Length: 136
Length: 296
Image (tube, rainbow over all chains, first blue to last red):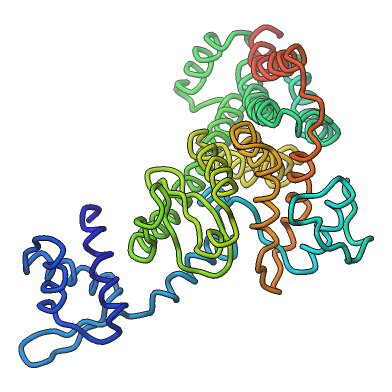
């Protein structure tokens, strides 16, 4: 399954870009412009994607027409929820660089940083609630 | 019996005073790795002390080797095991199983979550834009890493827009430090310890402090390679940039602490003091075992 990762990505990428239902043949023809690919391989992987719930399909004559279940943006939004800690229940699953803040918090941080000498870019504009967050 | 009483007193002291001492220690943020080592030693020492008490109650003979014999003999009694031996042994085994179950749940849960995340990432993320990075098309700046077998460093297109090449290199170095240092293992253990002993202040303290100390460890490594000011600015940029109104309030103090620490570094902790703390950590682990063995 792991080895299909790249092909899965290539197939999903096309279906998202085309934004219309497509047959295995159409996908094979497009991928074949970049590299050699067997029809049966693509068919198998698209079937896997269907079974995983990434694709839906409906009969069109003798062939299936496949279509992404959800847009790329929706999956990305789900990943961002993971990444920003909103949907995590395991602290060790992902490690993000820094938590994000609301505008008010960013303002308070900026004020606090000015007192200690400031960060490039952070010290530029100075008006903010000075009592919001003092450095410990 | 003396040993059992002493060990109970010791375990209580470690559980209640340990976290307070760690909180007041002014050096943990200056050398976060040593701080983490001492937290870990306190946690291990606590578990060992509790187990030692139970073993000692079952077989107050002195040495563990003798204990095994006494316990085996008592459990093999034809008329059924003596409850005074069986009960503490069962409690010790139960306690260790409980801890092991929490550790297992933490790692299995995290691995499953990462696997699911990585599967989606394979299809949605783009690895061609920047070598070594997976790029997500999203306006909000975010950078994170997926440790373990699925190891990847992920940045959003929003973060790429805000960070220049130097800042990005510093951020990536920070994430590499997480991956190379296997910080997820440590965080998993701290979290499992916290869940295994939810009412013990030591466990809650370790689970709460470990994430910040881990971040500081990674900050230090990135700052050494790319400069403190560059990393501090990158932290600020990612934390403050484009944030939605729905706040993640928990992080603010930590961000301020990390940035302040980078911009105004305190005197580094001397080697002598670091060695002293690490020696203390080693002794904390050995103490309960030795005292259960040596004292009657």
